[in-house]
Length: 447
Image (cartoon, rainbow, N blue to C red):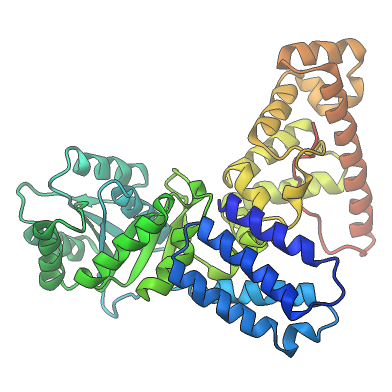
């Protein structure tokens, strides 16, 4: 996500870190590079011009040029301005004082709108809400069946009716929500081209008749500046309340995320970072700015861990760690929980500095974890519980069974032994009252 932009920005600031003093000419040179990086990222040119002007104004003042750490101050300014550019703080959904809250979701054809509706419903279910999905996409073949399949996957009801009167379908869906006690109604409308007057009139009529509490526009982040142009057209006709960015995990440039708030005045409320039903989350401008600048996103990582990790299993694991009884079976179970948090590449990007370890013998990719898992599964139950019994012939057998080399098996065994030793020492410290608790096990990198 934002790999191209992030790499360019981080490269620009790397040049600054060796400077003990910055001149106005230095700032101008940096701003030229930042401007070029943003334009190449498909950020709206007016947004780029305004952004660079604000950053420069702050940087040539005493705040930066007179600082003892001018490079860090420039990064701080850019971080703050990027955060402000994307909305400042997270924008929340406005819920009705009396349920059900009605949310209408609109968007361009092929933007991932129906899937976004289902992901939003899942997100609300995790918060204790009872959503009802209403199928008002009466034009696309199988759209209603798709919504029903997604609803079934997460055990959320879907309302459908025959006919093409979307206003009537939406109204009957709201009535159904009152009958079953659903407190949120999510209306999935048909995808439409913003230049199609008839279809735009239809969605405007649906808005006027149903009067939803929130209108969310779904835009495909990978379309960059085109996504922003679409948002502007929908804003003029529909006056939506916020944006759902889909396919943000595949967006190497970042033009849509960085432009849409400044151009439309409407915040990005949610972003989808994957294909799974649980991949939609609240969009945090400050966290996104930190990731662009290579400073990680530890808060999101912690939230993912809390949502994915089984707390009972974590407590059992902690006891094993304290007693130095951590086995390869425990490690395999822990690694699977980590992988449930999302693609490893996304998790790595949330840890400051971890991406820089790529290419230095550190396992940062999914294939590396798969190799570790293959090695462990090639062990016998006795070997997993007591790795010290693994002799040279056993190592050769494990390597052959896992499709790896003896060297890779040796490396994993060596790192696992070091991990157990460290955990044993930490357990002793905790028993003596020198530690507050044990960290959850994480896969040892480098196999």
